[in-house]
Amino acid sequence: MIIGHLSDTHLGACIGSEPEREGDYYNAFMEAIEIFIKEHVDFVIHSGDILDEPRPYGTAMKILLQGVMELRKHDIPFLFTLGEHDISNVPSTPHPILLQLQGIGRYIGDGEPYEVGGATVIGLHKHRRVERGKLLRKLGDISRQLPNLSGKKILVLHQGVRECGGPGSELSIHEMPTGLNYYAMGHLHKPCRKDWGTGLLSYPGATHWVDLGDPMECGICLVDLSGDQASVERILLKNVRPKIMLEVSARELEAKLAELEGAEYPKKPCLWLSISTDRELDMQALEKRLSQRFIVKKIKQEPVQREGVIYPGAPEINLDEELKRLAIKALSNESAVNFALHELLPRLASGELAEAKEAVWRFFKGGGWRDNED
Image (cartoon, rainbow, N blue to C red; front, side):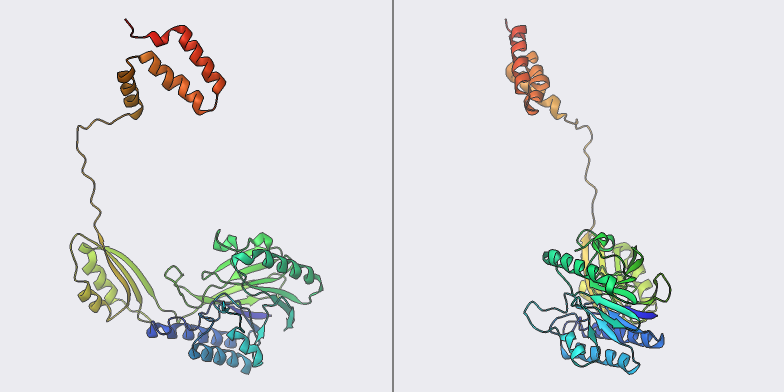
């Protein structure tokens, strides 16, 4: 049994803002569909953020329908859940549900088990951090259903787990049900795999990077559930636009730009450029030059960090010694100052009031307060 697993396709990203990049997400999605058909997968799972906006433009829905219909022509079922980008804050039917209404897709984000191709797939839609309690209760319900499910068991979620996504995630892997063969995860744009119980938890990552911090290598997963243990092959997609983040000094700028302009790229790369300089540059001319080979996302000038000036001969001030000097000057009683700084204040700071009173009485009886008197 081979299944295709993809996530975070973000169809419709960059519509209206960057027309040149809008097609990147469509091309990557259709490339994934072609790979699944070529590999004769038994079914495909999409684990959420199918769209970039819950109320998408028509082109995004058109590409989604075309891709799923291609799978349908080859008798490959398409199962999906919803991510936060698919769900509107205004109560309404999410657009991807149209796939089920048209009979070409199956929504599995409602916690109801669905049998397909010798496996049982069960999933949940995205739950936000404020819904964590509800999410845990639903995962508990799924856990109780598992003994009654047949075939290979697959859980589909669009959530972050801390072991892959860090402390901002909604779940720990230790809060996930055990007893499943494969955990088809979405939400993180970087790939990650973790063994859990007798199964394998896997994030395929986004099919195309969305944010600056996303990995540039994007892909999908082919999951082999034929044996006792799930195994995953991640396939990198070719329809991914390169991105370049460069920090240079003004002195080395020309050499670096010549190197970039002389390289070959599968697509026009996106470029973020930071230049450290002590003089004003002609940014308009620079952007015009670079825009011939790159999609210029940002160019900024950073002032050169100059080292601070050190003046020799200035003595270093010891605050404790200076405080003591000023106190002696004011009181003309070194014994009283030493007593206050080294015996009385430490006891008061630690709340030892009885010990402080006793120390004051001993100091008074000892006559230390008379120091420097005639």
